[in-house]
Length: 207
Image 1 (tube, rainbow, N blue to C red):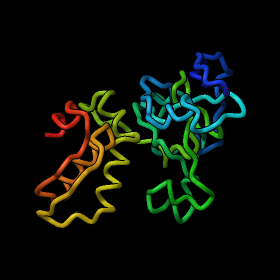
Image 2 (tube, rainbow, N blue to C red):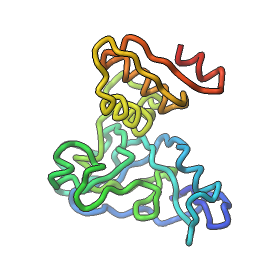
Image 3 (cartoon, rainbow, N blue to C red):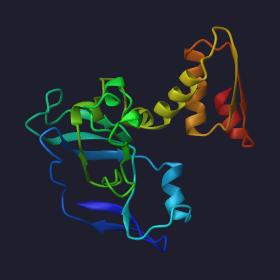
């Protein structure tokens, strides 16, 4: 398969790598049809996260289930799915809260070295019943891709803000996550949302 790789010297290239195997009986392999470039991917490119070896990058993926393990119950080959950008074991007390960031064994991020990157033809997904979400009819690929990371992050921020009904919220930064936080705040009952960003186009998009 092909995979986007960043080398320690910040060279970006498309590498040919072996197709991933199933990551256990509860895992799946997803054929990636779309993958986003996150700002955190650029940290590798800009040297903020020094690399000791080449890394297959990307953690935002939408695709089609290509293979499933024998213990997978909620998905079938051919299902159109999005992949959670953060992976947990799917079985511990932390994961039972439906938040992989609370995984007792430690959450992992696709494309961070331990798990393969999503900017590839194929992606091995552990604990598929926990990590995957079937995309409903009528949701296009671009919209689904926002759900994998940007909306999840923006929604989590708005939830943690404990917004009172009719309250006022300020959002600093109106990039993709900020735009999703804005809409999440409105859904959670905010009456006024103030957006602070030096880029006029971003402010206009949030208006």
